[in-house]
Image 1 (tube, rainbow, N blue to C red):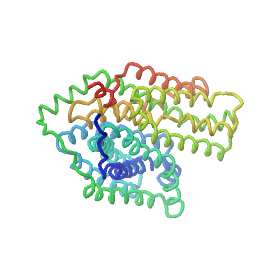
Image 2: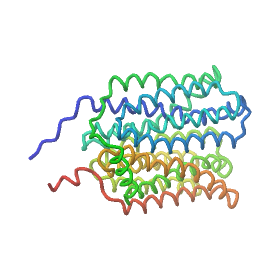
Image 3: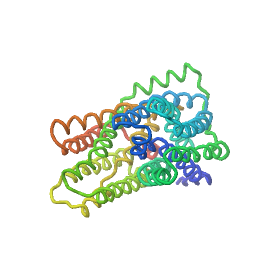
Image 4: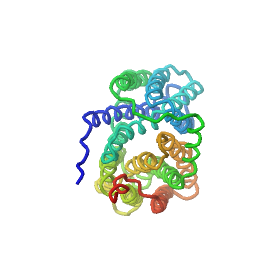
Length: 402
């Protein structure tokens, strides 16, 4: 009988540091949406221009997370992560100096280029420093910080500072944590050991990533997940307001319950996958997430009933942790974990983030506000279908019979 390896004393500490880093990344990325009304007044932006700002960040994020993920696989994690955190934090400051739409678009596009590497490199660093039996738990801790900040802390932080000191100050304040955490990462997070890769070997491994059927299934799942997220989050508030007749306060409670549920799923479901396997955890999370938009379509549900339904079915963040991070890293060729995460992220950030709101808006104009919810449910079903063909990657399943 072999004993379980003892947990590295600093492993949970590293997970918490990287979670704080990812939460800061999501704060700086999402802040322009939280401050949308302030930007609309202060810079005289139209709703379509605010949407274009978000799209520019998403596309630049997706491209840079793939490219710099490959770079980090070759030169090391901290050599990419620390400078990227400094640059995006400074660009958050510079966002507060923008005087018009064109300047803000350029600044936010550059911020997306700087933040993209943080996504793949943070996740690859966590994978490198995790014991296999606790990899799902650790990745879940890091990813759920994005849900916590993006859905709960970030909106309050940004809007309260903007209300008291102005939207420019909100951008300045959001840049401070990243600079502090860059120093913490440089001093406290160990550089994972890695095998040296030549440029030719790195390109060959990158081609292996692109040739993996399972990674393309993760790519598809990421695309459909982002369609699910944007189709639901963009149009569900309008559906509740115009079709259900809910007040703004009721809508806020329902969306807050959904955010809390997403955080809890992201915190627990990857850890559960350490025990039951990645594929079963993905399938159940996808099935639960498919129920969310369908629950909103049920007749007779008032706000008091819809809030717990939203909390209990908001499993999307758990799918992100599994299909966009954990499974791609375990499928990746040796030393190419950041490349794999970056590749899968292209499906979500570059394609799904664009397709979801555009297709949802077209369906509303063609049919009604129920159509985007059906689109989200269909995207959830597509995730289930993709996961049915996905190989199991949980390490203990491969070693149990040895």
